[in-house]
Length: 105
Image 1 (cartoon, rainbow, N blue to C red):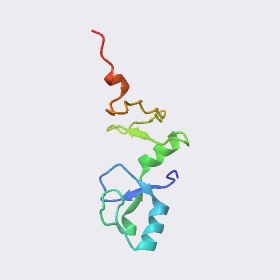
Image 2: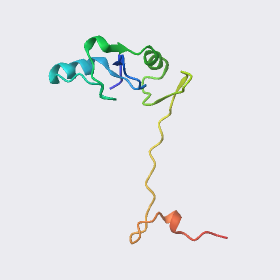
Image 3: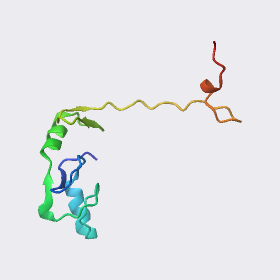
Image 4: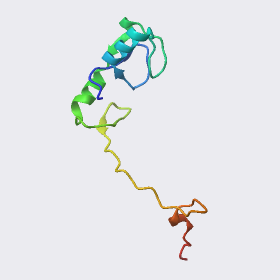
């Protein structure tokens, strides 16, 4: 599920955000008001929507799963890596075949 309202606590110093509505529902059900990323205690008045993350979410594609944010505040969508097939291994050794082959000198 994509984050719609990226939030974090006022005192949190990390970049990561959580979905505000999901957090509020969890906190209500479990009486647990701690940041899911840094475990800082939170009060409802400590919660804030992060404007940088709102801008990031508006700027990247709907199917983006990762974004890199640089120290200067610039950001870009990180393309998903294609699923790679596992290297075949030798049955007895468990070593990748490419690593087991003698190198040509």
